[in-house]
Length: 264
Image (cartoon, rainbow, N blue to C red; front, side, top):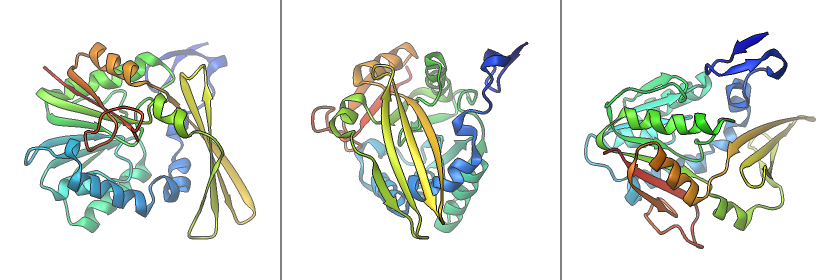
C-alpha cells in the first residue's frame, strides 16, 4: 500500500508510525508551563523592547512562524506592528489569543502548517524564534520552510531564524535538567545528540501525582556555516550570523545562533 502523509510526502504503510511529535496537542498542553514559562514570556517581551535585531520600522508587517502561545506576537503587536502568528496547535493559538487579549492588542492568528504556509509578498519580516526551525525529518522540508518564508516576504524583507547552534550546544550539553512546577510536579529534560551531530532528541519527562509521561522532540542541528548556506540556497542575500538578539558576533561567547537574511 502506498500513501501520502499530511505534508504530501510519499510513504509506505510499513513506515506509517502515526502523527509526527509536533502534531500531539497534549504535548504542548502538558509541557507548556515549562516550555513557555512566565520567565520566558518576560524575556521575550524584554527582547522586543531592547534587542537590536528585533527593532523593526514602525507598523512593520511581521509573520511569526510557530508562534506558540504568543510570546513574541503580543509584545510586537503592542509596539504597533501588524503581526500574524501561525501555529499548528489549537492549544497554542488559544493561549496566544489570551495573551493578546491580556495585553489589549490585536493580532491575526492562523492555524496552519509552516511547511505549506506562504502569503506571497505580504510581510516585511518573517520570524522563527526559540528553536522553532528544523522540526522536519527531511532536510528538503526544512529548506522548504525557508523558501516559503522567502515567498511571504516583500522585496527587501528579512527573515530571522533563532536556533541553538551546534557550536553553542556543544559548550553546555550534559546532565539532565529538572524544573519544578507550581502544582508540585516536575519536568526532567535530557538532550541526546544523534546522527553524528546532525539531529538532536530532547526527552521531556513530566512527573506529577505519582505518574510519569515522557515525550521526545526531534530537530535538525545546524552550525552557523550550515544554516548560512541553507539561507543562500533558499534565495536569501546579505546573510549574517549573530550570537544573540543584540547583534553580538557568533563566536565562542555566543548564547544562540541567530541568522538573518534579506529577500532581494
